[in-house]
Length: 178
Image (cartoon, rainbow, N blue to C red):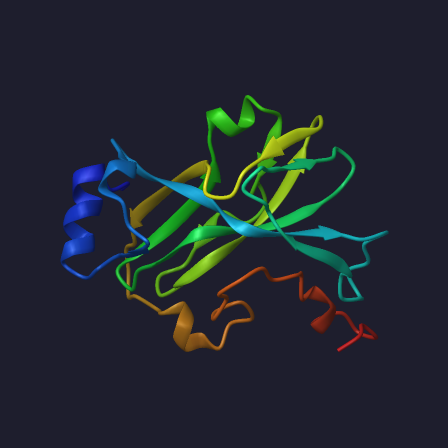
């Protein structure tokens, strides 16, 4: 089940959910409107799952920056979110989609215990200007059934993320660079 906006607020005040920074005006009927952070990485050249991705990192200026269509960008959420009680789903929303921005389509699940600033996969259909702190999507919280298993306590690959993470699939590929 998805928590309603009021249920998210109640769980936040009860300490069951963390959203930092939190703004009650960003609650919607069934979600929290999350924002884009101020740093972005443009992945350089060809990508290879067996090799760490090279990138150029930059701060997004207050005047904005233009995303180009043939580039994979990795961004980060402004908010750090988490919950030992609830799972999370993070997605872009209609407003961003209407600008031709595809965000976070391949990894929307935040496990119970996953307390992070989310790494975002971002693609643009056409050149489009983005700004730090702009609304970029929706975060929903889901009731999990069964025995809880904290992601933070499983020594998972991306458990302690506090910034932009490149793919670490190369750690699993025989002959990959470690």
